Length: 143
Length: 443
Image (cartoon, rainbow over all chains, first blue to last red; front, side):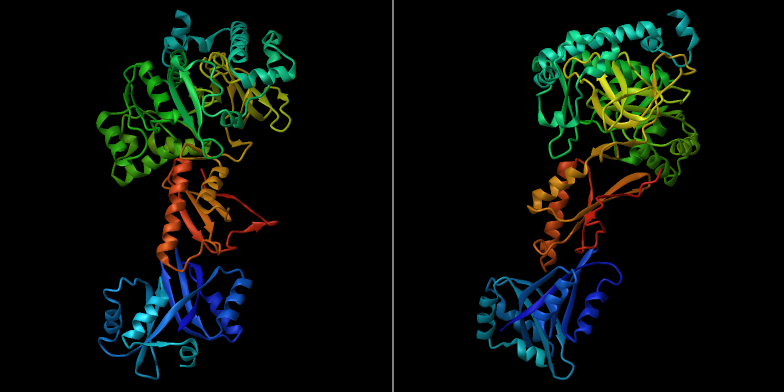
């Protein structure tokens, strides 16, 4: 159920995301989801790609500081209340979301939420118990 | 003495009489004091005595001023290695003041004064201020930092002893500085030259033209500055700007100062004996050649310094000054023989930055110090390359790291610095070694 997400450190300056994007393009690695967390000075590029091992090795070889983290991909119907239902399942459990981001499907009628939890195993248990659909890595990448 | 006072009626003070001591008499006094201070250090300071033992000399071997070159040097690292009180020649019951300055690593260096040392310090500052044409009736604003740093309190006691009215504002709060200068009719400022530049700019923003104020003199020091900066300051504020020199290890500000002829800084050499040596070999150099300034305190009790290597590069200027002082002059300090940086008047060593970074990270990341000047104020940024060990994909964690680095640097350096987390390998390396300091300050 856990998905490997790649994070890169990038200074908040023009052009600092184009180099990693170009590297992935050259190697035929596809970006399925991307999120930029930024401060005034620097940012963190988080992405889910089709081949995370190859991407991580590629970035490291090119001098990037890379971190691989495990996140969960939650599928929700793309309608009002979709997110609230998922978050409702976590209410009162003490499970803390370290960060999250969302993106809609182009083809289907679902949206995908990417979560990072301090303890993903507990979160998986809880979300599945609430009947929420978690995507495995292959499923996410297939979409 | 009356003749002397008459001949320099506008820029003289009774305390300035030693400035005009006939040469033979001055050299005599220096030799007498040199013998006494060497004997004192030999008797009370273990490090100094053991170094003299190694060289096989005793205080009796000092028979002429030239014999000073037989004595061992004292270096800044000696103050660090004997921290805090190892170089004291007086018991604590005779010490009335302790000051500190940056060391090369985490700990500061400590300097001590007996009452007599404090009095000597005030007297040389009186002579410095008098030489700048200041006197009783002047209102002197002291915008050097008050505290462990010798600048504030040193200038303060000197200005009071001169008989001037002192406005002890300490550093910072530019708007208030300007308001007081204007409201009190301040006639002289003491601060770092870059801070004064900042005040000029800020005053203009506030609609205050420095040229309209009664201010007529600035006694600027604690950092090197140039003649072009002086011209700029004088043009923008219609004051006469003086360069004052000093260092905590010797006494603080007041080791030397310009007179109104502005041809070098007179060293108050009845108390501080100057030599110029080759910074590499330590060999004495004749007057007129550039080298490292070495100072010996001739009258200091609590912490005598014998042949202290200042690391400041200058020369002893040949010839005599038109002002008639017999005190020799040094050229203005332009550079140093070590990597010490002077930032807003505070001494900073790149090694201190390393100490702070190591403290937080356990390992030393690649870093670079970037110095710029904004509105006349030095700005120091420490850029730290993010390593895989430091990197975390949560903003909060990175921000926490940033804040920890920031507070460690503030703590070790004693001044505010900006920390910037930068990408790995973004700091340029020349021959595998990173260039640690980029100085973009222009004066």
